[in-house]
Length: 236
Ligand SMILES: *Cc1c(COP(=O)(O)O)cnc(C)c1O
Image 1 (tube, rainbow, N blue to C red):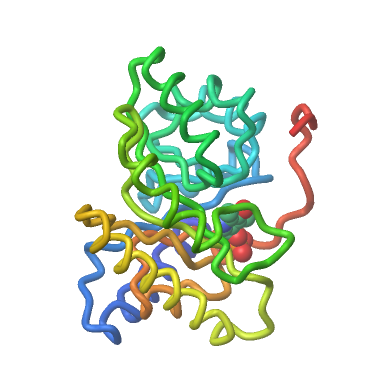
Image 2 (cartoon, rainbow, N blue to C red):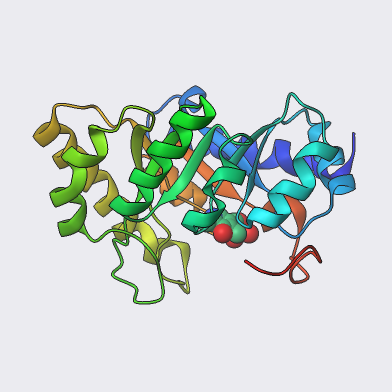
């Protein structure tokens, strides 16, 4: 067993414990190993846990890594996606966590249709109203949800958030709870269950699970500290 595989198993145990505290089954909670800035050799090691779900936030890194790694791995795109990069990302990923505007969703709809794909998406909501973050506001997601749900090639499965940088994991509990409450309201208003809640990172994934996260995005708690950007084309 490698250290990295051990780290993944340790995170999974903490996920299970957090789920138990919330009287939830850990089976419903997915772990994305966020491998951004780490090279393929490291990802290959993490696979041995075994683990097959990885997340990247830069298009050029995703493009560089996927062809080098086993084809059974599943990839989620978690970063801000520019329209001119959608075409490259769509064939490689099963989900996009960062749909932050209706215009982006509509471009994705068109390109996914052309590519014969039907990606799962999470609608990114800036519940902390952090000026530095992309995403819908609570008001704009209420306004645009019907249009988002009407898209045929884009499966809206839930909401995602990145809370403001916090001193303590507990500081983010209210943001996670706010995302869940917003989801509950939107589900009732639209008659669509919206089961997915993508929330929680290395420092606060246990709190996020206690508040209902169905998928957590964990990087440094698995791979260690990032040492800056992996040197691939730095145009995004
Ligand atoms: C980098 C990143 C993560 C993982 O962050 P860690 O704190 O290292 O776990 C999660 N989500 C998004 C959107 C990211 O960009």
